[in-house]
Length: 314
Image 1 (cartoon, rainbow, N blue to C red):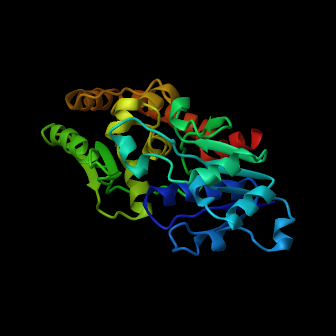
Image 2 (image 1 turned 90 degrees about the vertical axis):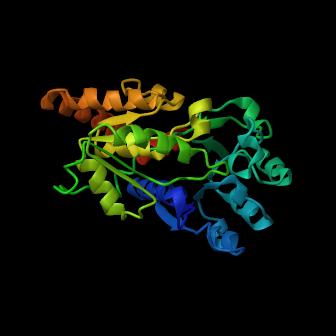
Image 3 (image 1 turned 180 degrees about the horizontal axis):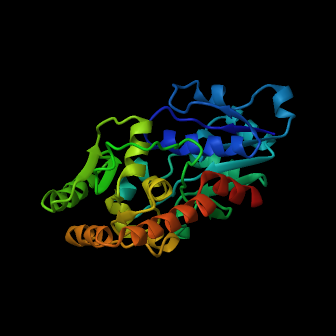
């Protein structure tokens, strides 16, 4: 069966949907990829439109805000299943004041989607119903995952020198809150004497990032302010770090703690450094056993193939 799966050319969406697309392919589906970053022609490039295609069995997987014209709605109506990622229709302040955090789809199209029996709504976050009040069907929590199909690490002695590593960006979500959090945590590591491989907005290649995370002794995760406060979602770095390395030190976020209760976390930068030191002080075999257990858990239960299988069961 064919799956029309959206593709992004940049930012976090690229890596997430690359993993999702690869998972569909691994499960034996024929993938058709569009590009949501193209101009107004996006919908016409991405969705099936000719009568022969519309009469075939196919799935659609994309964000709900792409269903913003008659052609897109027709494609969804004719799909066997349409797996639509939905945004909250309201969200706590101050974040709810910015379109990055809430639905931008006109209520006209939401009303039409709510009528369809073949639509499955999903989101990465744990669902708080009041935030999604316009969506009239159940919204399923499908967290982010590890892309084990595209991340293939190599042994690299250059990266084995690092006690702990981090790869990311400033990730301005509209309020630029993460920069302050990153700087605070990095400043504590700077004075720690640990050998830190921290790369922010350094344009590492996909393979360099993969090798860095896999070869470092430990990996560091840092979340945005809204994630720390609300605790509803964790970032893809959680799964990437555990899948490639197994040794993760992170700030505290609710969903991360619920998915991986054995990972030690803190919102105190000094405590994050202490947790790092404590793990590095363990006998080598004990630390490696912890890392191997975490990697096995992710590779068994938290890859994008697992997530697609979850969606298909709905």
